[in-house]
Image 1 (tube, rainbow, N blue to C red):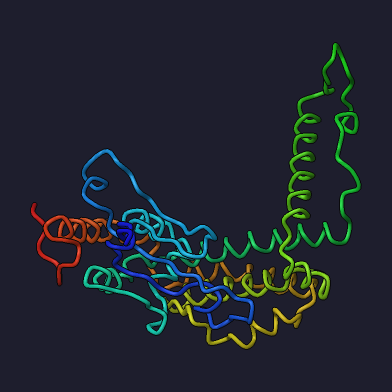
Image 2 (image 1 turned 90 degrees about the vertical axis):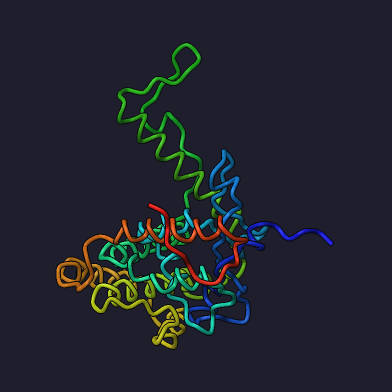
Length: 299
C-alpha cells in the first residue's frame, strides 16, 4: 500500500467548503474541501519549502499552517471561511487544529470585511465583462493600424506611447475574450443564455457583499447562510442584470460607514497569530504531529 502523503498524514484540520458549506448546493455541485497541515521538520527547519497541495481537479486543497495563517491575516475570504465553518462541515480536526479554531478570532478585523467586499467587486467586474461579451462580442482581433501605427522598416511604429499602450490593452482584452469563449463552462453558458448573465456568479457576489457587511457590523462570520433561499432565487434569475448592478452599487456605498462603525479592530492580531504558529510548530517538532494539547514554547 502506498504511504500516505505528508499533507494527509500531518493534517490538523479539514472542512467542507464552497456551495455545500454555504447551503447553496445544487444537483451539479462538487464536494470541495480545504485543509491545513504541518509539514515535516525538513520543511520547517531545512531548505525545503511547502505552501499547499491541490488535487488534480482543484476540488481539494491543503495549505501549510504558515501559508494559511499568512492568508488569514490578509483577510482572504476563503481562508476566513475555513476557520468559521459550521461544526457539521468540519470533516477532521485534531488537538492542534482545535487550538487553531479556538484562536480564530485573532484573525478578524475590519480588513476582513473590506476584503469580502473587494472580492465581490471583482466578481461584479467579471459579470459586467462577460455581459458585454454576450451582448456585443468583439468582431475581430485589433490591429496596430487601428491605433494609428504604420509599418516602418518591417515593424509597426505607433504615433505615441499612449497609442501603443491602448493597442496592448485591446489585445489583452481580445485574448481574454477568446479564452472565455474557449473555456466556458457548459452549465454557466446555459445560465447566461437563460438570464443574459451568469447568475451563479451573481449569487456569490451577493453572498460576499452581505457577509462582508455582517462581519463589519457584528464581528460574526456566518458561512452556512441564513439567507440561502434568497441567494438560490438569485441564481434562478430573481434579479435582472440591471437590478444586480444597481443593488451592488447601493451595497458598496454602505462600506465606508460600516468600516467606521465596526466593533472589530482595524488590523488582525499579528503577534498572537505568530505565537500560535510557533506553539503549534514547536509541539509538532517535539512529538509526532498528533500530540494532545500544547506546551509552553521556549523563550
